[in-house]
Length: 426
Image 1 (cartoon, rainbow, N blue to C red):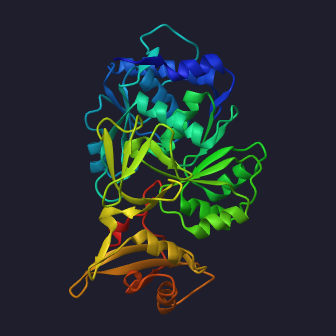
Image 2 (cartoon, rainbow, N blue to C red):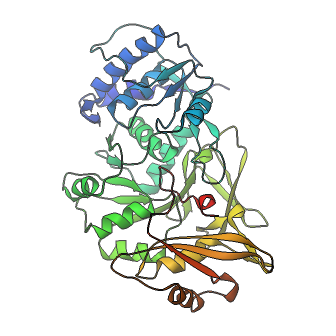
Image 3 (cartoon, helix red, strand yellow):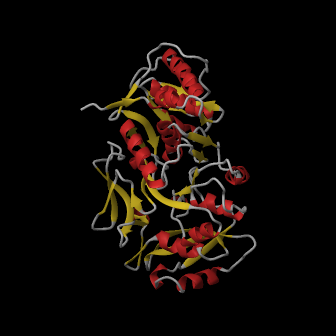
C-alpha cells in the first residue's frame, strides 16, 4: 500500500514561513530557492527517480540543492567533494546530474512539476557509510526511514518548537544529514558549520540565544571541554556518538554542566538506534547469541532489513539499556582469549596524560595476535610506555593488557565524521 505524506519543505514553509530554516534563509526563502533549483535540475534532464550527486560543501547551497532534488522527485546522493578522484567517480557513478556549484537561485514561485507529496516507501537519499572497516557502501534511505528517525529522535530528546540544532558534522554522512532533514520535518532551525572549529563552536554554545542541540563526537567534545566549555546557557543536549565514549569524558562533561545524551547509530538505520541507552520508540534492538546487535523497525534501510545485523557487539543492562562493547571484526583473539578494543581504550583514556588511544591486534607467532595500543599523549603530561601498561594492568584482565604501547605525536587517523580508523594502524 502506498502511503503519501505532505512534502516536508512546502509544509514547513506554509506553517512557519518567517522562521529561520538554515543560514540566512527563512523557510519561505528556502522553498523559493529550492523551487528555482528544481527548475535548474529539470533543465539538466533530471526526472523523477533519477539520482543527483551533490558534492557541495556544507552550507545553504547544499541544503537548497538537497531540497531541490527531493522536490524534483529525484534521489539525492551526497558525496564528500574532498575524496580522491577515483573514489569520487565511484560514488557518483549512475547519477544523471552532478551538482558541484550552487544551483541558480531565482526568487519567487512558479508553476512547474514538483513533488507535493512524499511516498514513504520511495528512496529519498543514498548515503555512503563512513568506511571505517571497508570501502564505503551506498545505503538507500527512504522517506519513511527519515520520517521515523526524526520522530524517534524527538521522543528521545524532547521537542522544542524553537529548536536550533547546530551541525558541525559532514553533510555527506548520516549524522550531519539527519539534522537538516529533522529540522525540515519539524519546521525548526538548522545551524550549519562547514567544519568543526573549536573557537567557533565554543562561541555559539556560549551564546544565551545559541543552539539548543548540538551533535558531536567524543574527540570534538573533549576539545571543547579543553577550551573551557562550561554550562552552555541555551543547550538542552549534546547528542554524542560516532565512537566509544569513555566514562571519564562523561564525568568531565557533567562536572562542566554540559548535558550529554550518548547515542548509538549507523547509516543503515538512518542515524540513531538507541539514545540515552534506550532504543528509539519505533526501533527494536535484540542481541544474537554471540552478542551481535540486531536492529529492526521502520528506520532500517530496505536494503538491510527486515533485521539489520549491525556487526557491533553489545549487552543489555538490568533495565534493558543497550551498552555497545565493540565491533565483531575488531575483536582481538590473543592466546585464545577475546579482547574488545573499546574496553582497553576506555581504560587508557581515563589516564590524565592520554589524549587519544586506539587499540588493535597485530599478528604474532606465539599468541596468534597481540594487543597493541597506539597512544597520543597530552603535551603537558608525558608518561612512559611502561607506566601506561602498569596503569592498564591494575584495571584490566591480564590478557587485555597491551603487550605494546606505541606513542605518537600526530592525531590518530579518523574519518571526516570523527570515527577512528583502526585499519590504518594495523
